[in-house]
Length: 619
Image (cartoon, rainbow, N blue to C red; front, side, top):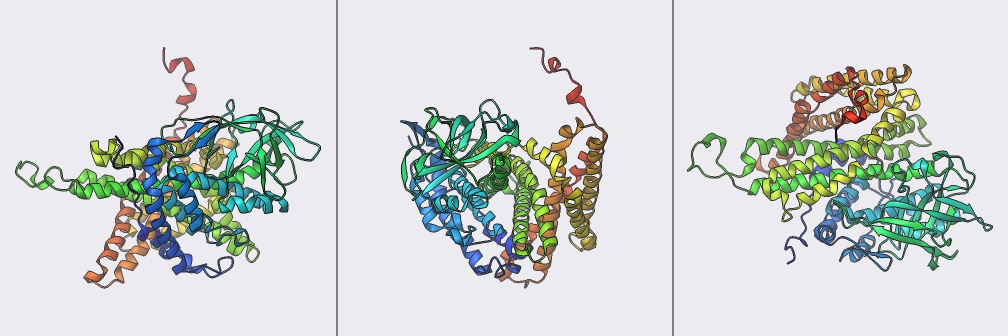
């Protein structure tokens, strides 16, 4: 018997919150109408958000549970996506939502990254598994646009951006996992300048599907004689079907799907084992013209993908929270605490119970804070483009903040997404554990976010091993300085001021811990770094999120004070009041964890290193 809930849209989004971030807190309107965003204004951006949400609810949302239940299937060497996905793909590209931020030279609308981040949140929240397919095609196109030759751009970008072709990134191999430098996929140069590709890649999202005519794989491989490790890897364009110089397709390129994975979640996304060149007939071409630059080129796609994972995280967490809120407002169970001993007392909605309210407020604070962090990062990207060539110092500052925040968005966004989804299930109680409600799928879908595109420990090591030292540590100092300046400016604020002491203390604890980690590097105590890296990333993420929530609360307090005290402004007053309470909760309950983490790291405990391997269990 089919599930009656399977084809219903259960996606929810808070557009009022999104527009507050864009147009009030981060003042996107200040750069709209200016190069390179001359064609955009506040009204246009707002209309795009409204239109994307309508599309997501009408087209993608109803397919989310359908794709989860049916999954993908492999037949005759080809992957077939769930029913309705092909139609949704065509409608997505017809509507143009995926290309809003693409350069107009390649058929896009040139929108700011800050707007596109929220468009991606809506599309991913409505159907994470589906949105991975066009997301990967978009990422592949961006790499070719940045590093490809003029011929490659003209040949591959129109079908990739236009939806005629899909795309993938192919890094992981069976023996190597995250150790990309151990790649065994080979590239042998041919007389015509192209390369014969041979090897196997695993965990390839969207590795094959029936929604596009062709799929362009970006494959890391090692040219004969190249150095070992990541320095010897090159990046190749390897279409599933060979492409003629006029853009038409001429037949198989010896790319075979070995199998598809059966997973815990994102079941509508085909995760493939791909075999390249089993019959020595797989031909690829170098991205650009220089060998052994593959990792630098792939990092462009990987960084974009890491931001996208953070977006996926907040997308499903937000919908999980809003669905749990709806359920809590509707579900009646138990009397009010004021009448808990009276068996005849009326049953109240569970939103009236203290622990449910605690969970709802924690979910709200984390969702809104992580979303603010993502939009902050995206706005830094936009400001790089605004200032490039006219004020290189400002452009350098904004690029430095982008580099610093990427691992935070990916790791903290994905870790907390899973926890928010788990908390949403807890809010529902037993109902949340069954498939009649959407939160169990959100939880299953969310678990992969902390694993793919570099596990979250890889993000933490990237932060402490690379990002903290960039520009001689100036990026970190500027981040800490921005937080400290905010605390100094608003510490006397009548409503938010009392919470800023917690932010100031957390910022100081973070700065002190960064110095401690520098000492470990300088004194040869390197083993402590990976032990502490995850905790440090969480500390820095909490400081960043706390700062942005409190910044939003300061603005919300000012906006609320300017509203007329009548019924016409009741909804706005409630919205702004919610911003203040979310920030207060985070400041009181989450920010103090930063000092606690700093104290723990200060102990320099080596227990995980000192325990003998045989002592973990006597089995």
